[in-house]
Each structure stands twice: as structure tokens, then as C-alpha cells.
Image 1 (tube, rainbow, N blue to C red):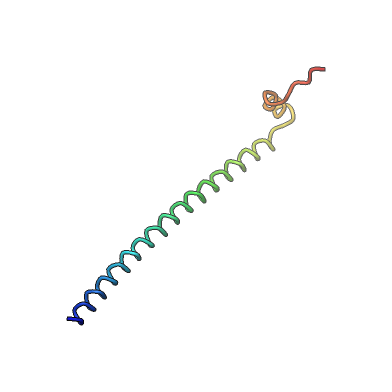
Image 2: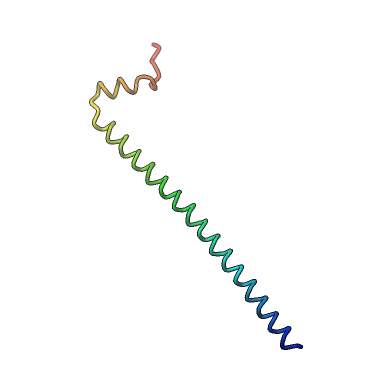
Length: 77
């Protein structure tokens, strides 16, 4: 009788440990997925920043002045 109880306890413990293992793998996958999305967004933002920086760098003074005029405060002297 005691041998069967030990066997059932061992099977139950193995089952619980298996569930915990599956749960932890799922949590890890979820965290990796979120990190991957964050990295993709960072790369996208860096690419956009580089494109805008290059575009502004390639403008001559008059083009830059014309494009910046809506955001520059007008001097009221």
C-alpha cells in the first residue's frame, strides 16, 4: 500500500513539474517575442532617424530655411 502511494506521489510530482516546465517555457517565449518587437521598433526608428538626418544634411540653406519656417518663431521687433 505504501509503495503505491509513493508511486502516485512520484507521478503527481512529475506531472506538476512538467506543467511548471511548460509554463516557464511559455513565459520565456513571450518575453523573447516582446524583446524582438522592441528591437525591431528600435531598428525602424534608427533607420528613420538616419534617413531624416541625411535628407536634412543634403538640403541647401534656402531649402532648409523654407522647410523650417513653420516651426521657427517670428521675431517681432
